[in-house]
Amino acid sequence: MKTKKTIGRIDKLDLPELGLVKVQAKIDTGAYTSAIHCSKIHIEKDKDGTDLLVYTISAKRLGQGMKAKKFKTSDFKLKRIKSSNGQVQERYVIKTKVKIFNKIYNTEFSLSDRSHMKNPILLGRKLLSGRFVVDVTEENLSYQYHQK
Image 1: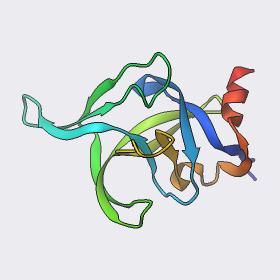
Image 2: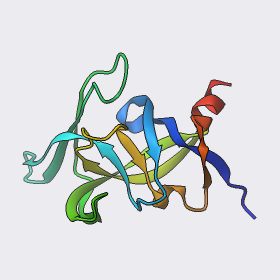
Image 3: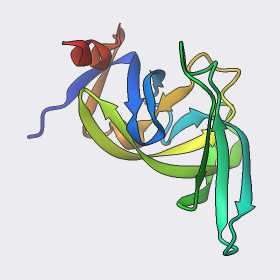
Image 4: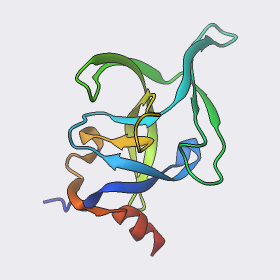
């Protein structure tokens, strides 16, 4: 039987492919898909006519010393996702890596405007299932583990 790590309700994590470190995330077993706060989300065509998803991750949502980062990718899809208020929305979804407890996981993040939310990242069940047990009385367990 595979041992599951205990993770708290809030943690700081890294997204190495996006160059993001120690970004605060809410652990949410009620959400299926993970989400990351982005703005200026749109499609552009490259010189070959391929669709590119363009998005910006805001600096003020990432913490001290971070600058806004603009990304372009052709590896994306459009998915129907139920938001926290129960409405179904179409959102762009990207694949990237997330580092938790010094281990790298491949996962998907939907891009959404989380400016009205406290945490710029939400980790959902798709990533958590089979890997983690959530203890809502704890915070930053992965971050503390990383500091050792």
